[in-house]
Length: 348
Image 1 (cartoon, rainbow, N blue to C red):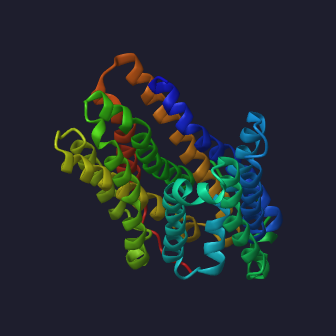
Image 2: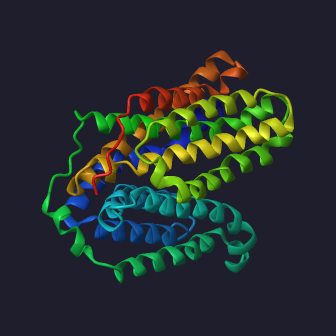
């Protein structure tokens, strides 16, 4: 595949997140954040269990779509639950679920081949089905947990269409999108960049550092999230550190390139978690899902388009130095938009 195809393949799931976030807000408005989250989790479990049914490619893609749709409903539902259940500590609660999301990413990548595949008799289809089990258990725990009684006021407000004219929708969407462009752009183009400069031996170390670097950010925000949430200084500092990390990828020293990859992963996770914590602080309880859906539509739409355009530019120019142009644009977006954010008053 050329760089355009690589970018498109990497961005397709992200595009799905963007397209279904607003319909997910409609589901939340009708049934409440708790029930919508449960439905999303059960959809992920069902899709994972059925992805390996038969050798049919249409079934594989259809069930992957179901999984993506489930995740797209969960995304705008979680900030609403944070606002309902943890209104006084939204940043801490956001850091907790973001930590779980990142741990799931690491465990999924690390355990499938050495653990799940042998348990599945070497059949990747059954490995997908086995991964559905913990997801299903999570859904059942959610069903048996606190009901939507505390979210009645959120359901009473049936508004679901995002307010596209409100500045918060675009500010948060572009900031979160900048962080996502940074992360997905580096994941997409780092392998081919290392190949182009003759350092493919660093591929595993750099990709591991990029993805594992996210985990420390979630732990830092578990401790400091309540202090940092709602302030623009952490965003500005994060963007400046990203530019430093991107510069480090051009230094022909293995230790520097690996450390730069870890720094980029750390900053991308920091921006994501701090942005996810803002809707419960900025929106009234009944409107958190609307703001979250609008933010995620903009963020993931940007995450799909910018790396794709970056791949097209790289193909057209064949300039290796342009490999991280999307990541640099993401960092600059965070820097500019974060500087325009107003300090958030903690209302609840």
